[in-house]
Image (cartoon, rainbow, N blue to C red; front, side):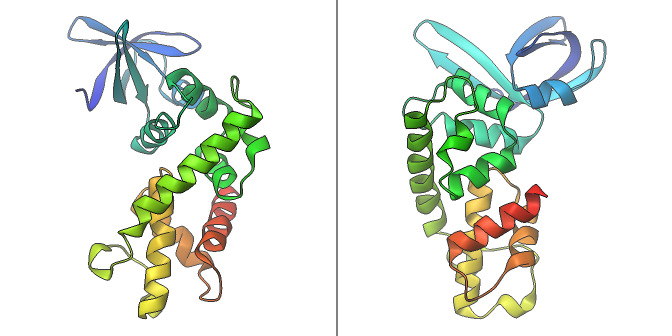
Length: 206
């Protein structure tokens, strides 16, 4: 319903911000990362929003960048992960660390978020890996790829592997430019796609 909301920061709390837009105050729940980067009361701000509707509640969630919003929306597709748990995860671990945990099956790394036990962490990894596989399956097509990367990678076998790896990073919340650059930096035809993704995430995390 709302792609984003911009306005003046009226108030900030530990887990939400109130934006005044034309005399209307929008209470928008968000992550610690967005709260830290959004500015202070009286300043202008813009957040990308998710409009969440339940039978007994309507809530706005907002983030300082499209990538964090994409990660949030990916998380709430997991069985047992609601918006509050998704926010707890995004507030406890960076997007890059989260992506690395999913790719490397590091369930323990996800349990540092409030409300995430080992079983739920394992389910998050299992379900998101499945979703990544589905999302990237259709991307192994040279005609679907439009980005800048080393022209030496354009042999058919290499480019398909490259597409699958960059596609996985995009699904995990990175933009296409970041994904292309990260995979190009570690690309090795002898490596499996999962290892390419893992190496790229490690490089981005440094």
